[in-house]
Image 1 (cartoon, rainbow, N blue to C red):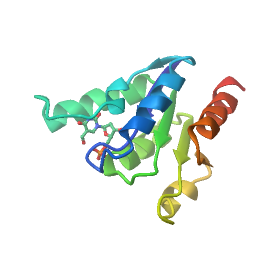
Image 2: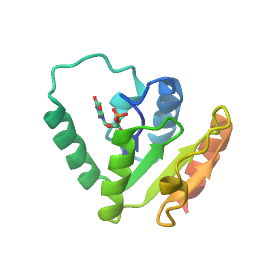
Image 3: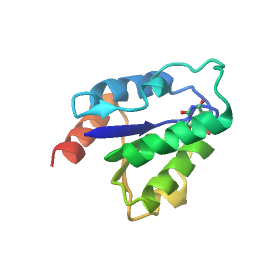
Length: 133
Ligand SMILES: O=c1[nH]c(=O)n([C@H]2C[C@H](O)[C@@H](COP(=O)(O)O)O2)cc1CO
C-alpha cells in the first residue's frame, strides 16, 4: 500500500514531531511517499512548480491519503481536495488546539474519514482501525 501523508509545512511546522511519529507508525502499513514532512524542511533547491508536480504525482500514485489537519495549511487542504476528486480514501486526524475548531470544509465533508485525537496512542489506534479493516 502506498500512503501519502499530508501535513503543514509553510502553514507552520510546529507539529513536525507529531508528523514524524505518525509517519513512523504508518510505515508498518505500507510505503510512505512523503517522509520528508516528518522533518523540519529547510530551504531546498526545488522550485514551487517542481514541488507541486512531484507531490501531485505522489497523490495520483497513492492508495490512501492520511492528513494531519490540526495546523491549517493551504497545501494540505489543496491535497485533500485533489485526492477527493481522484476518489482516494482519505483519513484526517486532528487535535483540538487552544479551543480552535478544524475547518467545516474538512469536518463537514462526508467523503472524508475525520477523527479527533488527543494522544499519539489514540491516533495510532485510529490508523490501525482504518488501515487494517
Ligand atoms: O516544500 C514543500 N514540500 C511539500 O511537499 N509540500 C506539500 C506537502 C504537504 O502535505 C503540503 C504542505 O503545504 P503548506 O506548505 O501549504 O503547509 O504541501 C509543500 C511544501 C511547501 O509549500
